[in-house]
Length: 373
Ligand code: PMP
Image (cartoon, rainbow, N blue to C red):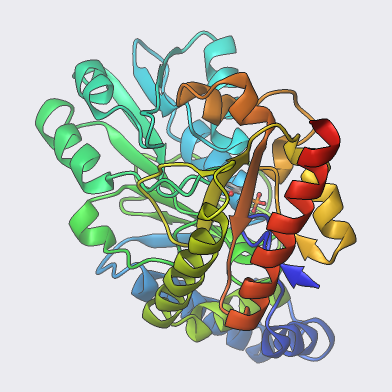
């Protein structure tokens, strides 16, 4: 099987799975307990916090462990909300775990603005600039789009914020960026950054929220006061340790080089077919967004899986919904959206597999296209 849906999830490192087992079956102590064994676990968790900060190139700030990025995004957004006439700015390209939180804020009566996407997948920076003012409480954007791979210029947004709304918090959903591209959180001057372990070969159901200054954040989960009161509930120790393993193992430069090589190779193979259109995205080499003239994306995805090639139709979290909000915001036509597929790489792939996948994609597409014609 050739797995090309790494934006949906990745396979865990074997070493991470072994570590998971160790912390589930041997060193299974509750990090909040007072005896030596538990205190050791607490220290190990703190080491993972340091790993996260190091990967973000952060010189200060805190890390709160969560049950994945959906929770990190909820905490960042809901935990930043304040009563009063504050305004909130969201990208129309956000994952449902930001977009639907924004919708909920709107439903609760908060002033929420949605920013359109440009045709290249990035947010409309001029719209953000025009929306910023001294009432802006939070700006929330995705670093890399899970649908298209578009990379937003976070530094640009951060500078606009400093000029026009210096009190506003900047939240970045970094799920498709962390461990994949170089991030310098200090330079970007980001307040809140979400990540999820299962997107970089860690386990599912565990993630983190980086917080520059913890003061403005309020908890949205109440209980035993773990994570300094910002996220009650016993930490998922095995998951966090396996996440730490994956962070330690991720060689961003090497991964990026591999993804770029695979991206170029596959694009060059697919582009030879004049009916296959690679979307013109300013973005991450890990993700190719493309559409196939005259063929339904989902039908092609199923045909490909029958041949052992796994690709995605877009966000796994929204496959049951009709349409595609992100592509619609970019101004794509219905036909392009219906025929859309997403291909995403990881470092386990080989050149041979990518070449083979390219041949199968062209073959299966043409079989289906002939049937339609
Ligand atoms: N944000 C983005 C950009 C994502 O791709 C995902 C996962 N599809 C999430 C948030 C949600 O992450 P999790 O699965 O850890 O809840």
